[in-house]
Image 1 (cartoon, rainbow, N blue to C red):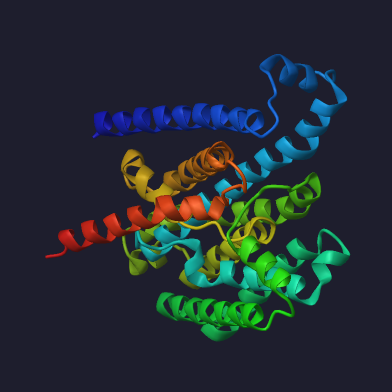
Image 2 (spheres, one colour):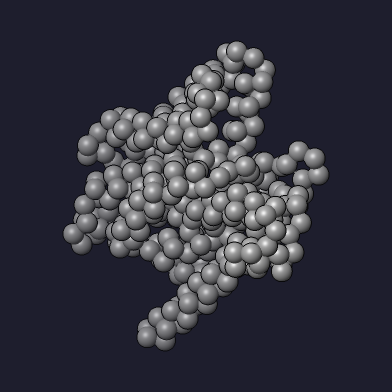
Length: 338
């Protein structure tokens, strides 16, 4: 038993070391990749406070905030996916299941449709965050105070369907084709042309969400034994459920508000890493956060390398990667059934 635990501990240590190293590499690669070439010497000079003004402008106003946002959004999606899969005990669950992403997208679309996004730059992310918070209140209202897991899922699906329908309505009734095109491009998901204003606006919400989710780590471990065993260990299932929903809503809502819809990160990453943490939900939370950041930064670097004219949208690339993986996961799950 002791040897088994020691082996698991060494495996987890190696995994986290590898993830941190990969995160460091992907973050620095994200700073290098772009339409304007920056040499390593120029990058070091800029970090030391020297270098050409044009290179400083590209680094501090374009590359660095984009890399930081990619890091934070990846952590949010990976962590949220792992938390929801652990709570529902379902490897097919992902943050979009509870409707927060759709509601955040709707809030941002409304600012584009009404023209508020043209009045000041932060109207769009503020609208997205407002939509996510509204979704939380609506889900809690629909599910009730002492809600079951099934009731929460059904409430989330209802909110997601309604928000998607209203988004389609906004597209259908858009006053001119330019507004419809802007909405469509935003819905594809991207972190291009984001500034530190977007970082400072979304970071507090994401960090609060991360904290709420990480606080439920022990409860998620207990849930692997079943709800009755979890309650006997002193955990309140309704409170755990509420905090997980709020944590995902706040963090994923803020991420969606500044980037648009970026799918499949929260589904793919926890599933890939689960076997390396001994299927332990508490360990998977942090591992999925780091893995999500790595995958998001790699995908964002890839869209810049693959784009020749119009830049490929980040959400499009993650969907192209995630959709086949999702189908493979469904087929594998079907084979495992008796």
